[in-house]
Image (tube, rainbow, N blue to C red; front, top):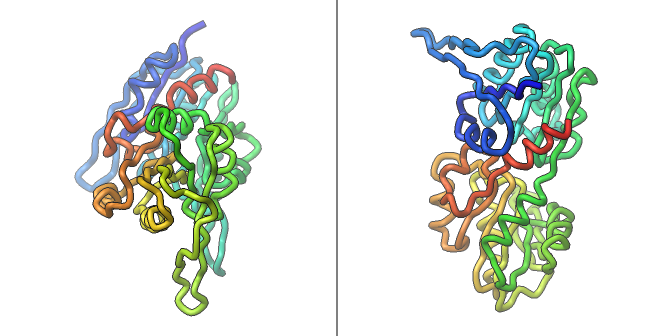
Length: 305
């Protein structure tokens, strides 16, 4: 049986070496160029004909969504036996429902976009990693088989590696993430904590009203599924420090970290370190020692089918 053929969108080239190291895969080449009018040219340099193909590509940007869709269509049309689309990060995951009239549920429309990729004889599968909301998996059409892979094992490994034998509390940014933190805390054998917040009826601003656990004299590791600007993270960290924590760290499944947000988070003085997985290109801004790879988990899922 021939090896699976691996292609990747440009922004996920950084994960290709990890995937090749974790699994028995052939690397497929892609020719890319941009025309003067901004239009893009893509060409598969290795034939997918009758091959089981893996397409690696999270979707941090709109351009990533389109490149993933274009390449998936090309792979299917080129005669791939099967197609496995691996999405370590699902963009627009926080737009999974409409709150105000007229809002576009972009998570659903993007799932429909990927569902429109022509089917292969051996089927099309989509592998998703640590979704913001479990229900997103069911936004895809029935013609696509989805696999939602939870990152608890990867995140807990990152925390254990960072904290070592030191005692600590696993914290949440707010009560909304409490159940996830409680689950991870059980896996780690530590106490969970979260901050209480109150929303001002007039301005809509959130303010911290207290911490539910005794963190005095202990370090706190705050978990969230993703870190973007880090404003809520820093606010929570200051609350834990005010409650007596000696030091606060942060861990996330997805290190999005746009622009100079990492610098701002560390400059706040509230967060001692940031760690997480390499599911998003933003993770490349974080010290390598603080980043743990998702490739072994994802490749193992590919092998299981």
